[in-house]
Length: 613
Image (cartoon, rainbow, N blue to C red; front, side, top):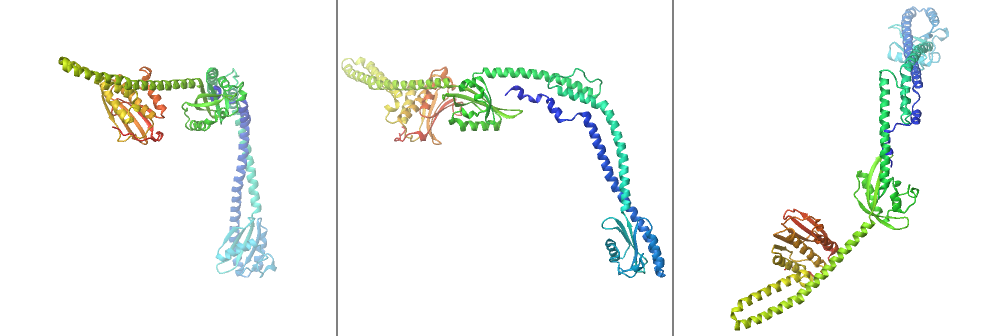
């Protein structure tokens, strides 16, 4: 992953993107003005049409109301005087008035009293009068009031007017609405065209002004902005002190800053590439479980000749199958937390089938393309081999030391102790002779016998320390008790022992390792820590057998074996040889330093238990 890709947000958009995304400003503005003018014309047409039609309906309704009321009064008097011919004459004249479609006098039983035609007299209005007019008539008769409303299809206005309070007959007047509505629509169209034309002319003049004052200058700024990506910025800057000129100057300053940053990014990317390529470790970048970059060292570690052999493949193609599940889990954790994963040891399979042991460190980063993982693998095959040789050497040293100590212990017990015992017996025989022939030498002889007794006791203690478990028939508990006693005598320190009532059964080599660890801890506490008090405790806790040796002397560093011999290092080997865990406690609550060896009880082989004494 290149540095330039990680900083792609600093780069301006390419000219193609800008040109394809936006139309030229000087063409888009008049199009917007034209669309605005046409939209306004349409809005005015719709709005004015609605207003004028409503006004036309009100005018026709008022005309129908006034004409109907006037005619109802006149027709009521003439009907009372039985002047039917005069009524028919007035109805015919009324039909000559523009807009009047129908006029007739009807009684409460919907029979025509007087119509424009004499033949209608006395006949039912149903069939002679339009249906929509009859609907308004029936509504008025039912409510016994005057009624003026538009018919169902909106083509006319119907009015029903009672002739008088004592006369059950009514006057029906129907007026035409179509002509009035058509005139209203024509008036609205004419008004919308006049106002829209004036607005378009005004917009055109405004565009000419804006094109000269703003659009051309803004277009130049856009062209300069597109040119930033190629570095081909024009030399001519906008003149003046207005906002656009300030924007143009700011744009040029930004171009200069971006150019400098881009140069720095390219230099940083070059340094990064050189550093990654020169690392003595494999570095690869994976995205969506696919490798998209690997350095030359990685190719060499995998035994590949070119990047085309690995780019586009999954890292699991060369990671040993036994590590797949662990690697997947670590990748999920890294992607979830966003933090680097701690180093882990894995194995990779080279092209020729050989296996390399590697130490892997993975980290996640995010760029313009999303989340990706960078993995660094160090070849630790030689280091692991050296560690294995060192551990083997340590085990050999431990085993050799154990054999030599056992041999020396047996020699001390079987030879030196026997010789000293024989000398002691000879001295006791000599003491009997001296009592008879030289009583003055008895005190010196007693002292020699006492010293021989001390030498025998000390030699036996040394023998037990060199070969404790096999010499002591009582097992680990008895051996630790003897170790504590001999430590008091030989090291002249206060040494305490705490044992459970019964120790679990264990193999001899496990008991020996526990004993040696306790012995080394006591020796280190007396020799390096100058501890006046040392406590040895064995207990069973949480299904584990725990040996803990604490002291109140100078605390030791867990790395003290580097400067103070192989003591702690050998203790670690002893613990590892029996699958136990060794821990060091600095400044615990009951001491200044403690060593803790913990081993699961399930790893002890069943043997008869040994009772501590």
